[in-house]
Image (cartoon, rainbow, N blue to C red):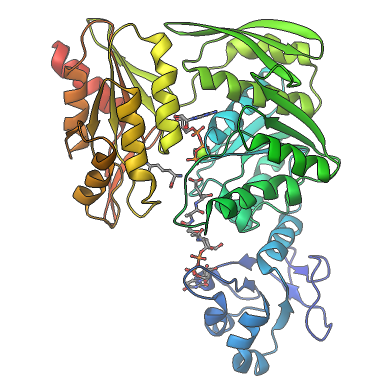
Length: 494
Ligand SMILES: CC(=O)N[C@H]1[C@@H](OP(=O)(O)OP(=O)(O)OC[C@H]2O[C@@H](n3ccc(=O)[nH]c3=O)[C@H](O)[C@@H]2O)O[C@H](CO)[C@@H](O)[C@@H]1O[C@H](C)C(=O)N[C@@H](C)C(=O)N[C@H](CCC(=O)O)C(=O)O
Ligand SMILES: Nc1ncnc2c1ncn2[C@@H]1O[C@H](COP(=O)(O)OP(=O)(O)OP(=O)(O)O)[C@@H](O)[C@H]1O
Ligand SMILES: N[C@H](CCC[C@H](N)C(=O)O)C(=O)O
Ligand SMILES: [Mg+2]
């Protein structure tokens, strides 16, 4: 069977009929199946993976993991095959445990963070704090695997085979600490159920992804799964109680017997933000924790980044670090790529920021967060993605209209949809806004509108490097376009 084969029993699986078998790899897509593989035929949003069992067997699958529906769909082919069949009530969760056993190694200390906004920021701050404390650390999520070991990822929370391959690869390279994002899709699909978490964090809960989740409550329940199911009873929950749903999360964590560390501006929180003073390059903050008050510097723009840093600090402390050492390294934190990133400055001093705000709450928060750093007017560029929650579009427009002095509506990954109709939906919430479909032109017009002391906030794409139109990804980078626009208008072009 070769060194890379494992038996079903080693993988925690029991086949129908009880016979053991060896498998040589795992695949969630029939097109990835190779000789001897276990094929996980999962119930999908469009079809059941059971439809592809026949194909997987033809490719040499030695075992099939599915549910009763998948086995029923493929009954004839399975009856005529010698492949082992494993029937699970929740095959996505079983696959998560199987993938963990297949790849074997995970960093000693893993934490996860969920919430509508702030996951990438928190995971990246956690990784950086660990590095500053001398650990070999990575963060995994929207921006890939970053830190002391790097790899690209196509999803915020990848499916379990990809996730555990990355965790094992990082561990083999000497990584001892990992901070990962838990997306609502990832949680609903049990993608991280096989990860051994030490602690888990919650940032906030507002509207997004209602194209995938049936309702607001279903979306909340998916996120709550991090505490209700994935984090073990002896794990520590770090929860932002400034968010209205934070209190519900606390109750869910306590009901599991988890220790809870609350953070917030609320005086009753275990880690409290006592004060914040803003300037052009960041903020000074005072934080109370464990009976002590820490005054420290954050070279980060935006009041909400202090909340993200507190959750990050809480997660690092929850996983064993000394609070004094954690607070001492916070001034070393740097802007996360594409999150309130100063992209360019005009010769008149006006600043251009690039931010990944792609939900109504994030647009409002990002605009409000810039205000204390800006003396003049605030111009915002906003657009909404195609093939994503359509209900958030007018709300994003309205958030920009309410919190900025001038709004330009443009395109942000229209994907398969008509860009003009997405813009029209955003404009429904921002009727006074200017419509400029071409994103480069929108940025040029936004930069052109800036007088001394003004600021431009370019929302929605953050670290992204492409504009997705139909199936084509055109190279596009907001940070680069901001520099090009400033150079063109201020005569700095070579
Ligand atoms: C909406 C969604 O999450 N879809 C995920 C889901 O696919 P699905 O349920 O749509 O699958 P389906 O098309 O109905 O097919 C059913 C099954 O048949 C299999 N299949 C399909 C075709 C074939 O030829 N052979 C085959 O075996 C598929 O692998 C699947 O397991 O299950 C698949 C296998 O686990 C995932 O790869 C797929 O993620 C897709 C690629 C995706 O784009 N997901 C995005 C929306 C996502 O997860 N995003 C989150 C959120 C980001 C954020 O927070 O903003 C993320 O974590 O990235
Ligand atoms: N704590 C917060 N509260 C409100 N808004 C926030 C917060 N943190 C970040 N944001 C906003 O959300 C945007 C995205 O931040 P980030 O990438 O950290 O979130 P995310 O949860 O990882 O998003 P995704 O769902 O795409 O993975 C930021 O650019 C900012 O506009
Ligand atoms: N992870 C989010 C990112 C959205 C970013 C925005 N640029 C868009 O394309 O809508 C999503 O896939 O919904
Ligand atoms: Mg993210």
